[in-house]
Image 1: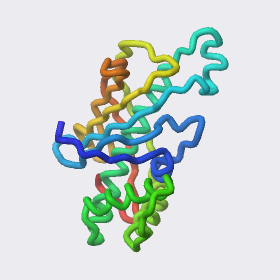
Image 2: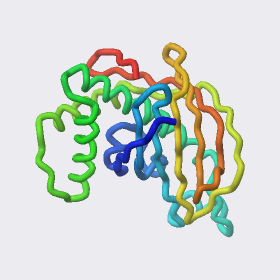
Image 3: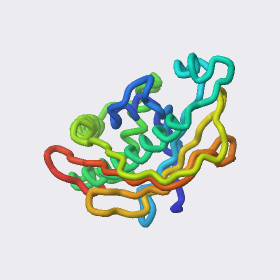
Image 4: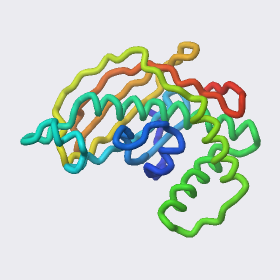
Length: 205
């Protein structure tokens, strides 16, 4: 795994990338990211609250987080990694460095936290690119090969790590794992398609 750089982004910025909305947005934030080959990597997290609607029926007397929701969080993390890579390449092709694009994303996060940030043309370009990208970037899961190793309960913080390990034309294969307090609760591989099309131009993430 390449060294990861801190990338503190919240759900508001994640929502610019993903089409899912609550209660089916399974990511609360991004912690760290590396776009560098040979294994671009993303770390995300989900805080499992006792107030989650699913606990009304799964189960009333045992707040057991459904495994399918853990899988969905990993799938969304894979999609997010592919889209982040595509956005950086798209911006770089238009003269904005990868470091500056990531800085602009962090500034968007800070704006959502009411922190002082000076808006810039580069930030506006990032917003427009994200809107175009999300509109034309469906994610399709082609294959899953995972093992559930431990249960997850209300009050746990799920930490997802996804690594892009191979590309097969439009398909990408990821090594994935989910952890709670350093204990692996799920691990395996996820293969899917992330169609990236920014401003009418196909982009290879």
